Length: 138
Image 1 (cartoon, rainbow, N blue to C red):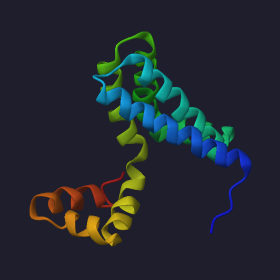
Image 2 (image 1 turned 180 degrees about the horizontal axis):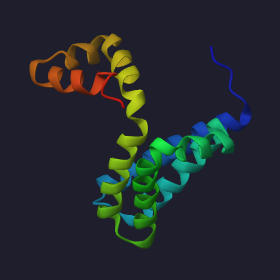
Image 3 (image 1 turned 180 degrees about the vertical axis):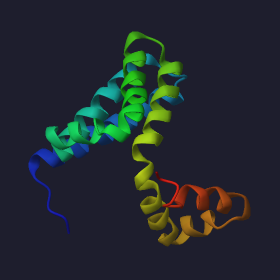
């Protein structure tokens, strides 16, 4: 079992609440207050989990400048009051930022009993295979 420090435990809680508020804000027709709270909690939780320096290094690598711009720009656009446009920017930036993790996530989900069989359905399999390709991540 992985041991977490108290700071990392707090970060996991903040990140979880951030994802909850983002999801709930989208369910409630892009409520800007919930989305703003979710954004702040998610980014703060990420900083608590991996540390401020590593968070800064992750977001501001040279090859991730475009992705960071879209993600943080989307956060800013949500905070100033345009939630739908901001979430579109954020989702695009999120996929650009974390696309290197998708093959790992797809490989893990394929080993989960029920989810793995769902990913092997004909229509879903080709999409998941594209997402899970590691040579696509340049």
